[in-house]
Every structure is written in C-alpha cells, then in structure tokens.
Amino acid sequence: MTRWSRPKSETPSARHTFARDAYAIRYGNIRNIVHALDNDQFDFLCASAARINCESIAEYLTELVRDAYEESKGQNDE
Image (cartoon, rainbow, N blue to C red; front, top):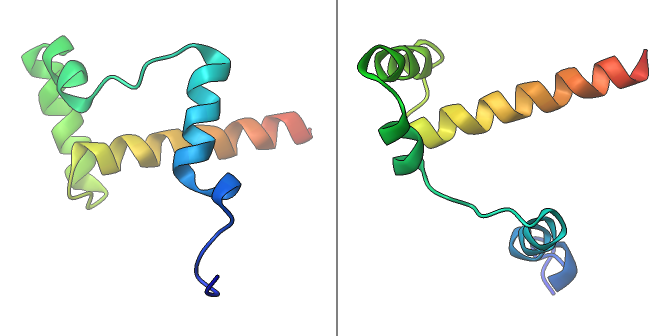
C-alpha cells in the first residue's frame, strides 16, 4: 500500500455503497435535476455556480452539500 492509497473499506466507493444501501436511496444524476427545473431556476443555478467559480453544476452541488453539512455540524455543537 502506498502512502496515497486507502484501505478498501475507506474508499469512496465502499462508503457510498454503504450509504446508498443504508438509506435505500438511488444516486440519480445531474440531468434529472436540470430537467426538473424551470428556465428561471436553471438560470439561477448556473449564475450561482458561476458566481463562486464552479466549473460544473456537479461541483456547485457538491459545494452546497458541503456548506449545508458544515452548517448543520455547527448547529449541533451549540
């Protein structure tokens, strides 16, 4: 094992499989999100992503989830 590799149980794939199975939730894809938005909502999404220099909608959604997670951790600490 190199210093950059992780044990198999700690790989993102293994964690994601566990979470998907534990919560019985499907991944879906970005296309599903985009198609569910009306034009104004899609424009808002793209403008919001561009405002924080994201190169993709996936990157922007990742940042939203990370921010929400950190915010929820802060609320739980109070």
